[in-house]
Amino acid sequence: MPTLAALVLPLKPRVTAVLLHPVAKPLLGATLMAPAGYLLWGALNDHLGANPAEALIRQSGEMTLRCLLLTLAVTPLREITGWAALARFRRLLGLLTFTWGLLHLLSYGWLDMGLEMSEILRDIIKRPFILVGSLTLLLMVPLAATSFNAAIKALGAARWKRLHQLVYAAGILAIVHFLWMRSGKNVLGAVFVYGAILVVLLAWRLRGRFTSAGAGFR
Ligand code: HEM
Image (tube, rainbow, N blue to C red):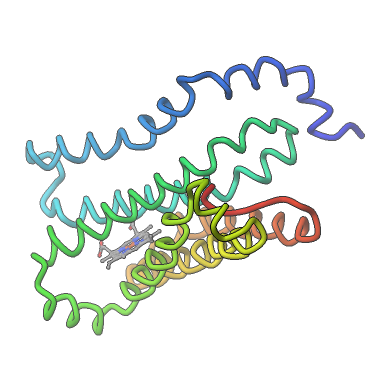
């Protein structure tokens, strides 16, 4: 039976030209940040329902998770299709994940909690899944901070790669955060879908653990 890489081989020159096009990265960035514009417009025009802060937290949380899974999907997709040019989008996707994570944190800490530390602490004690979310974002800080060429040089490729394995831990914690939050409400459909995607991506990673396939935000 032909492999997928063999099946999509005839498309490779055209797909590579699209992926290497100078507009490809800005277009991907604009597409994945477009919901932020929509949310801002909705917040300013009172279009986010009865609880705008909650709508902002939920939408930004889900966008963070989607971007994280897209980041994790780059290497498997590159290996399956043989489209090497896909690798140039991984750093951008990682940074978009981090940006959405910060917007999510801001929606919660600032818009919902009014930056009241005592309120936040009380909420964390009541809803510990928030702590898991915070840990997820914290894990992403060193990844975002070392997603530049100078950091790879400074760390050395092997150490950099090891550090960027943290992206998988972030994926697991993000699903735990989501599952914990949604299990309180007994609405688990989306959690299973995102969780299943993560399991497939992790399985792919474990399967390729002795190959040179990289991970991370770069
Ligand atoms: C970067 C890592 C994070 C990811 C991937 C993430 C993802 C999510 C997702 C998917 C949801 C559910 C959205 C929905 O119901 O559709 C959610 C909810 C929530 N997250 Fe996060 N989150 C992260 C970090 C954080 C942080 C740092 C905080 C706060 C310190 C936080 C606080 C919350 C809260 C309070 C909710 C529930 C909102 C509600 O009650 O409706 N999350 N998050």
